[in-house]
Length: 417
Image (cartoon, rainbow, N blue to C red; front, side):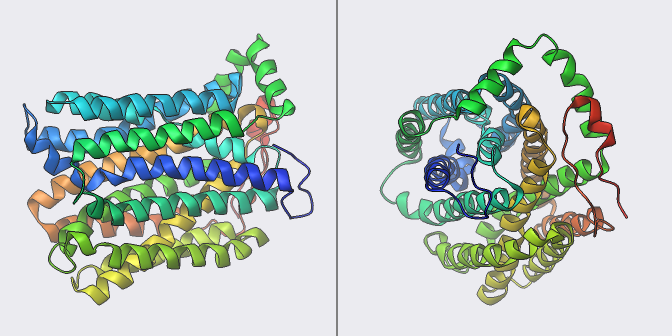
């Protein structure tokens, strides 16, 4: 990607690259999200079904994402971003095709695991952020996160409408086809810059590269700011999955399955507008205090779900969605400010692993809590949202230094005031 964007405005090449990659990854997000509301019900039609295995089939995607983010991040540092993204998209396609042919719950679990193993989101953000200055990086993250967030919400809203036409396994096959379209877009329309290729080649050829991984991980995991950002990502995704588990249960009696768009679409549109406005404040150095304020909004939003009528749920969904999209964007941009190009994939890989682990834990914990009581599941989600405020407490004025190389990681200026 062109790295001439030093004026705060994207060059034509940078903007084209950003939009093409954002569209491609958004198509992937649509395919991944569209079938989520139907997994637990669809599982009942498969041989070997049990409620527990149905929960595993739903949550295993997030666990696989968590496990494979770091290896894919390491791999991208060595062979380049484009190759790894193409391989990851290919795994998702194969997993969706296997899901189409699955006749047992175990086959579906294997298919969902393979879908999750194509864990390239960290690599996507690494590729987007490489070669951009801080101001452009935040703008780029905002655009891509907004595209992904809108795609997720739109697919969750339109999925029930599509289900009137297609069966669930036909939806799996349709999703495989549209991700294949994304794969072709990346293959033919995106190129890595010579600088990125040379960095990957140097990393692959370096005899000291493997030895540098251990001190990199040690210093990343001993950095307070990095750990707080990882915790914020975990909490954000936990609450996201919990909300998408709880809200459809309530909305069945309020809007009906086909009317969920009446809540999710206004919420995501409002959140995208809020992201654009708050990004200006974040760019001035207030990202950490914004993260704390966003979790406060999220907690208020979850609390509003205790009054299960359309008005309260809509208001709560708007506050939650603002938090989810903005936290995803600002935390990711902070992480990329801390990483040098040679270690960007690894740094993002750890972050996104923790993020997706939050999705898995959130789905599992909310499902178990729901069996006890719907209000207990909601209370647990509220407690987790409040913990986000606690995690970010005291971070106002935090400075983020760039990890120049492995030898200076421990010296990075990221002390809390």
